[in-house]
Image 1 (cartoon, rainbow over the protein chains, first blue to last red):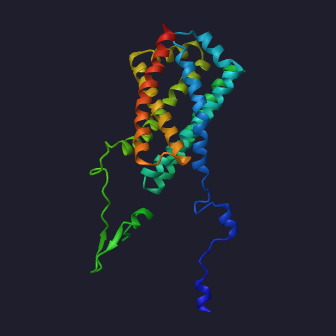
Image 2 (image 1 turned 60 degrees about the vertical axis):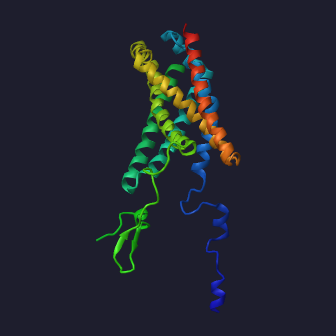
Image 3 (image 1 turned 45 degrees about the horizontal axis):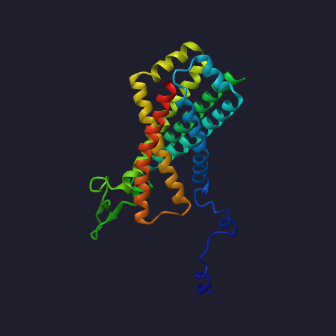
Amino acid sequence: MSDKKLHIAQMRSPLGRVRGMGSAKQGSHHWWIQRVTSIALLPLMLWFTLSVATMGGISYVETIAWIGHPLNAALLLLTVGIAFHHTASGLQVLIEDYVADEWKRTAAVLLIKGACLLLAVLSAVAVLKIAI
Amino acid sequence: MALTNNARDATMMGRRTDGTVIRRPLSPHLQVYDMLQITSGLSISHRITGSIWAGGLLFMVWWLVAAAAGPGPFATAQWFFSSFLGMLMLFGLSAAAWYHTLAGIRHLMWDAGYGYDLPTTHRTGRAVLIGTGVLTVLTWLIVIIAWG
């Protein structure tokens, strides 16, 4: 009888194994989204950098017209949103690696996420105010 | 008295054969680790340039908000970006951004399962450094040509 009990090597349910969430309940979502946002940012940041690099000396009215163009405004909204999402998840990993104290770590992660969200919304409002 | 502050500390606590509590020694760390080898040097640089870019995003927010706020605030932003300090910071930011982009592509290549052997790692590492220099110079050539 006791021999039989020793053969229970797997304590996880088949459903738990299939979901693959691990002990953190989140699985690979954070890691994956960091990669997805990085790939999305490659063309977006290249477009933004080339655009502002060729803007030296242009007037306020010309700048407003550029930001207000529907295509530019849409791409700016995507750039701002995805850039701050990627930044928040990247800085979160740095904090989790280097801040040992749990209270300080949690507070710092929440602060970073809040700041990134605020800055992203602020930029989006600015773009929409010009574009609409 | 609590022996440990958190779960990580708990793994560092040990006992001698006579029962007295000791803190286990750490494995060799920053003070003996050669940070100038290309593998670890580029690795920490990826984190540093990512942090720099995070700060650099504030420039983009400032630029957009200033444009939305009106000609006055926009002129102030323009004045800063075209000042010596502003241009210096934008130059540094562009170099950091290109580095983070190229090193990021190198990371995506690793994530896809390619380029783990040491000769390839060294080759792609050098490519990231050279590429950063070339693309940063190219970016500012575009700035100068468009401005002039």
